[in-house]
Image (cartoon, rainbow, N blue to C red):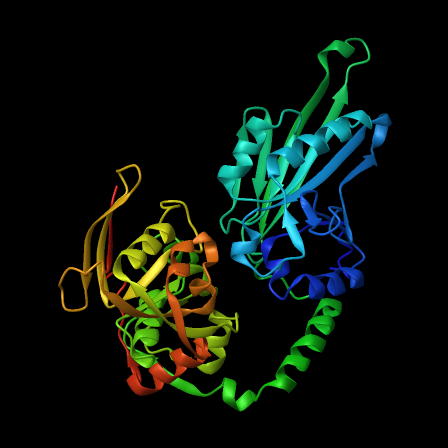
Length: 416
């Protein structure tokens, strides 16, 4: 970021993956200005150390650009900010920032956000005065208008680079007409470009340090071979059934000897399609599951597991990292009901789950702790902590050696 001379950044949930203290160290190394208008110190109530609230940038012809930024309030359930950080209401914070920027004479107000597209559209509707929203968080690109507010997202992992231009003008003869805005934008696919040597040197320094901590031969070790293609595509993992999700859920249930295995779609990150006969290596697993979270065994009643699954699915059909993938269960959920209801809840033997009976479930520690807002898990009890999830999956693969997971097995059926 420093080499690219990035000027402004907004905090997102993944900035807190290693805690608030580690984040502040990285921010101190950064030359960019960080927005986090709704992110505050829990003890003092002041803005999180190192972030700014608003910024006014002078433009040509005496015009002023006003900028602020907000981060999703769900960060405590999506990441690990700890108890020292609070995330205030996005809309109230945005209203305050817009009023402040207008008082400073801003002619055009830009919101940098880390919210879902639905929340960005709400922001445009509920907070008058925002001219444009540049957003993150969602993994797919979007460009649209919500009323008079321009909203753009470039998608995940720098697959796309957006170039946005706004021509601003004000009529001297007719000042009552206000500011005229003519937007233009284009998307560049970030592929097939020769790497910039200076960037390569920076990346090599850190990749070399990571390689020194791991055994290159270990990363190249083959665990299994694919008899069918395997998909880790984000769209499937976050809003449907996925072969990779089913594989990880099977691995958790088998290796931890439980009744049920479950993984959230957001745990698998590669967004790739592996063709038949691919040799799956340790390195591929590390790439696909970069979060070093341990697997755990949870004892939980059937009704609480049912409620947890409904919480995992509450954002469907919107893509969500909470989207569940299961092993040892077959369920049907009617999303047409309000609230949604589970009309079929079968165990591995095809029998209805006893809602009053206790079950053993293998999942990640993140899920067991109520991650993604799935708080019904907290009614269960964590019995033991096992190896990290990628290591559990590696053990499972080595025993199987040949992996054949179809695109769809009907483990979860959605009625819509």
